[in-house]
Length: 103
View (cartoon, rainbow, N blue to C red):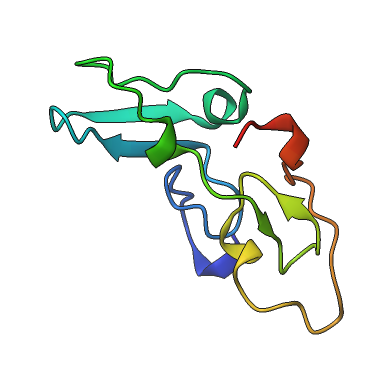
């Protein structure tokens, strides 16, 4: 596995966009886990499973210009903020175009 990992942690996000994100609700302290598909779906409310507080601002990542591919990405992984590859930009199969996600 990339980076020397033996098992992929679904919350890591270093070598590919994390398939799951967790957040602690600031109102009630409950940990809620969201799937990547729920996060990147436009106009989807990301609510606390306990008190229904909207957690979208805490869960949806900022759009960046990826250092790996050179493209704008609305759901970046660790490659996006890492060093640019010495042999130039690479094709990213998991790039999430910003127009697909409401910021």
